[in-house]
Image 1 (cartoon, rainbow, N blue to C red):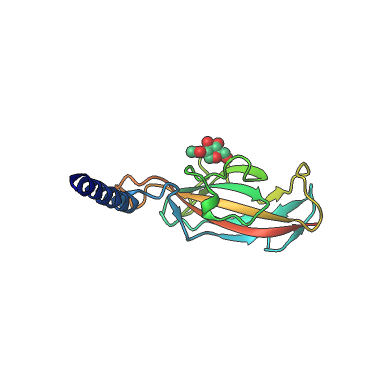
Image 2: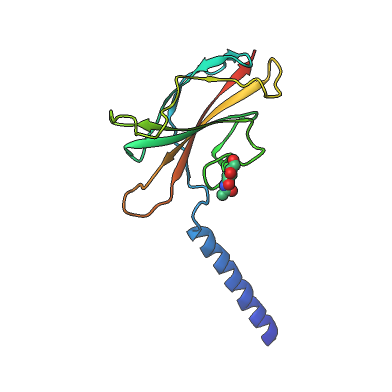
Length: 167
Ligand SMILES: *[C@@H]1O[C@H](CO)[C@@H](O)[C@H](O)[C@H]1NC(C)=O
């Protein structure tokens, strides 16, 4: 009798505790559903391996940062924000190509010394195991920092993507 009462109390406490943790646990990925705009290449472009395609990305800059860091990737599946790990990257084995990290100057600021602004074209690498007709997803992860300001919020990530067809 006493035992079952204690067991019940413990169960209740456990349930309360899990409910509480679920409410207060931050989203480990700190992702956002907004996104920037990929105005080039156009969605559905046919690109052959080893060829370049135009690249033009307008950041959403929801944090109104002076500079926005982006990383650019290729995946062989339609990426979503849940594909990203806690540092806003595609985990090893979950992407086909990593182009690199670029820094976009906002508000007409000059390119920050030591940083690389986004290139105006990218190449679909030859080394990927692709066949004509395959889909290649171009994914841009934009990082927003320190917003709202002063609250010590960790970096937040937004994903923009489009699909290309291997020619
Ligand atoms: C996220 O993935 C990248 C590989 O793309 C890896 O280098 C990094 O350590 C991962 N971060 C975490 C926290 O797992």
